[in-house]
Amino acid sequence: MSKLRVGPATEQYAQVASQRLETATAIKQGPPAPGTPLAVPWETAHAQVNMALNWAQSMAPTRDGIYVVGPVSVKNPPVKPVSSSWGMRSFWSLVLFAGATVFSGCFGSKIVPAGNTDSVVNTPADIGPSNNAVCNPFGNANHAGAGYAHGVVGKLQYLTDDMPRYNNLNDFMNNAQAVDASIYFGKIDIPTRPFDRGFITLDGEAILNSSGTTLYEYFSLRLESMLRLQDASAPKKYQFGLLADDGAILSADFGSGYETIINNDGTHPSKLMCSTSPVELDFTSALPIRIDYYQGPRYHIALVLVWREWSDDAAFDPNDPLCGKQGNGHFFKFAENPPSPQPAWVNLLARGWSVVPAEVFELPSNIASNPCDAVESMTTTLTSISPNSEFTRSPDITFEFESNRSGALFQCSIDGGDFSSCTSPKTYINVGTGAHTFTVRAIDDIGNFDEIGASHSWTVDQSVPTIVVTASSVTSNSITVTWTTNEPATTSLAWGLGGDTSQIIPDDGVYDTNHSVTLTGLTADTVYSYRMISTDQAGNTMTSSRRVVRTSP
Image (cartoon, rainbow, N blue to C red; front, side, top):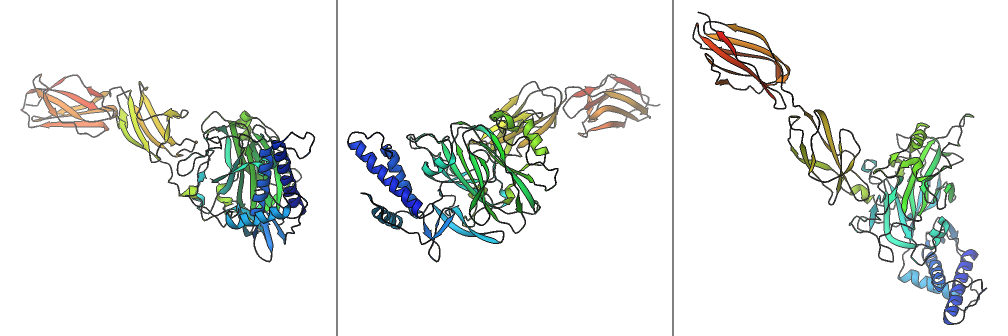
């Protein structure tokens, strides 16, 4: 909803809109009138009249005759009749009738503290998860740790097929078609990425445009929140930066209406613009902020809000080398999912910039809670591993997995490599000997993913243990055999009279490198044979050659 100052400017807009509608209607019914300054397409004129009507309908009296429209407060707005066949008197009568019968206002208004002053803040109406809420549509993860009262909330508009393709926010905000949905973010952190999957509500429904196709281009957002410092953010002066593809404007209300802090408007690739003066915040500050954003043609989207400490030291240079730079591949590797930072972005962070954290975004007080934080966190579980062992002789291994999120997709990685799309079951063939780690994570269709995932580590070992005899002692009725192995292994012994070794001392199941077996109850002055047996943790078994020994007389 755009700003509206009730008075002569509003009357003039409504009058011109109605005159344009009359002119367009006349042209539609008769020969065109070229050169007429009010001659516009009938649909455009009709939309402008409806817009003026909607503006007027959004006025909500607060107290003492104050009317609030957007962020502007005015008292006792004068209404004067104007000369027109449609007439401003009739127009305002229609406004009052429509406002009383079918319209409750685009936005509610709330008095909130901003430092030590009061200002009227334009905030969306109180909504809940059942009212077409859309959570982090561009892959920006939820941040439940910040609390249900934290986040950013916004309203969505789009250009219908018959509207011009605007390239500035003012035209978008004034003309785009409103959508009955509210958009929630944990924070403003959307690195450059492709966007072609649209806005999905909590009910799993995709928002469609007037043509019945998924909405993912030529839309605008008005995002609002309140900056309130938390323990982790010390009171200081801040410089803000706004990365956007396409246009974006950051504004703040310091007590006398919204003021532009960063103007990054226009259709362009990912572009970083920075504030040229500081914003000072302390623990008493509750600063209303607004980000107006529009996405022009499809393919790429970006919106990241960063800040850094501003210094009054003469050595501080507010002109960061990246401020004013643009390019879709300049800041992030947009083809990766999730996008990874390019060196330019890494260096920006090294210079003291950081993404404004979720904890400092506080929802307007008339929003009960952030419904996105109530959504169950995405988890990934390994349901089967074959072979399921820390050590294995097999070079092949198969994993089965699932997620608590219905319809989730998956990405797999082995030995720290890049994640790539995968499905359950996932089998790896001829994995080399040595240690390995497999990781899988669930990911939804807009790029949100399980940041922890599930993993399994194992070692492929196809080498038998080495046996070294350390001692062999006999008595008239016993034989004791001791040996070592080069890796942890079990202890067992095959033995018998003469050259026979068919009798088996069972495997003890204990993995050690030192081994000892004592045979008792033997016959004096008799020949016996034995073989030492050890099995390592991967199942590789080593059996020594046969050894012969005679008990004492």
